[in-house]
Image (cartoon, rainbow over all chains, first blue to last red; front, side, top):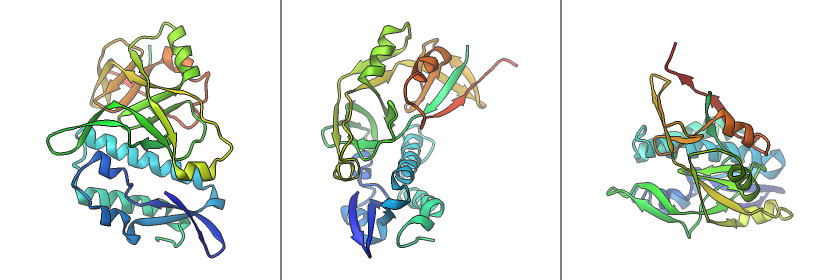
Length: 99
Length: 156
């Protein structure tokens, strides 16, 4: 994650699919895919970004746990589906909005 | 006796100094040395990043001083991400210890099928389960962002 100053707002920039996917699951995504602008999400610092980011981290962590426990297959499609679910939950608070 | 499945705050992820064990398909299956890199922190003293759990040194001492069973503590490394330093410049992180639960719980049809009898247990590889005795100790410390779900035992 990084901080970006955009249109007068402080935004916390995070990756829709987290960068740590490289450490946890080799060969599912390329570096370019994770760093692609379509995978970046901005959350204004002013809207309690830390609470939202904490919730997003917990959702991803549960997803990783389900993979390790053999409940979910570690496929690119499942990662993209999970990102869509998170966008549906929080996308109206992102800048720009995802939904 | 009651058992509770815990979903602790996720304040960060695996840092670059973690030693990760992979299966033959390149999927992480365990962490032999933990470097926890904080991205944020709501203040809880029990934290996770799958499949690891960490507690503040203060809480680890309380656990050691109790009669709780089914755990090991391991030294670990903690660091702050760039974002953490920007968002929380005044926060000084306490020392942490890795908490490794060694008891086991098996669930079948959403009920406890087997319990090793320890206060700290796992379901599968990743899920933390504690006894009510352990939960009483944990709740004397800050765990307000931890999800707590009571498990059902098999008897009717």
